[in-house]
Amino acid sequence: MSPFSSDLESACRIAALGLPAVRRLFRSSLPRESKDLLYHIAVSRRLSYDHGFKVKTYYGDWFSGNTKDVIGSMIYYFGIWEPAISEYVTRTLRPGDTFVDVGANQGWYTILASRLTGPTGRVVAIEACSPIFLSLQRNISLNRCENVMAIHSAAWNTQESLELYQGPKDNMGSTSVCREHINRKAVASEFITAKPLSELVPAELWPSIRLLKIDVEGAEWEVVEGMSRMLESLPEDVEFITEITPRTLYRRGRLPEELLAPFRRLGFNVYRVRNDYEVDLYLDFNTRGNAERPQRYDAPVAELSDLVLTRRDCSFL
View 1: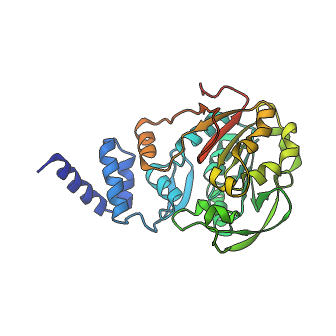
View 2: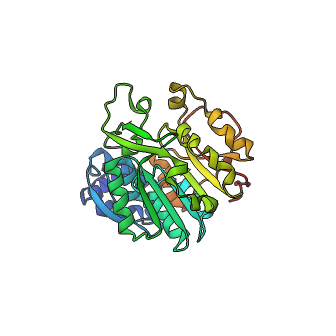
View 3: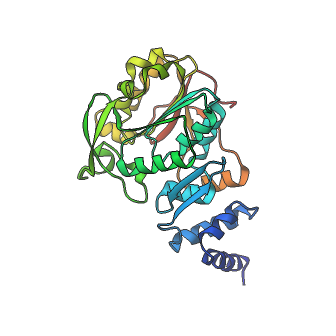
């Protein structure tokens, strides 16, 4: 019998014990190759399908979710979501800071920022999708995040009612107000209230914003336009993390560089953060305990990218 066959049989026996046993092994000193094999067996046998959970994260917070969703699956097994971005947030936020989470989803960054900014800090979490907003509220309550303001709304460039198009059950995070982002034939799942970010975030908080994250699945242009008059009033050390989806922007008649132009004029540099959703990224972090640092990025943005916009040098962080 080959060593691989032996490993395969062992992994199958472990996987048969159920998800809690599999999850514990990902937190152990098991070799990376064995963890990779174990993960793929668990997924191929649909052990991870539709499993509700409440677990401690890598950072010591609590997270409630379901493994049928990609966010829940990664947090359940590895204790972390988007390792490189999460590590950047932990190195940036300090007690007393204000963090704005636009497209807060189930609250991964909201609860992380709540702890980092502490009792004297503030977190504004904005989420449009009703079922996801309920999950956000659940995680805020689970962690007793008293410094969080949760807002059920879409960030936009005007005040109006918008159609919301829900993503698939295994990737609810792709829910969007942009039909082009989901499918041109998509049917709206609900109508939601939308307002400019300048109206959603209380005026007294803008001067203390240290970090503002935008993850809105194709609606980046409207979000930025909705806060444009506030850009120059933000503190010198403010930073932005934004996901840019060129494909959706192109379909809507916009270019990524148009979106970045206001920030470049104000002296912001662009850094790119590695953020693919393959299990290798999580296995690497799980093994090493650290993530790749942001890299300076001056080329045109032509593919889905997570960017840090900052006036400081990020390469040494």
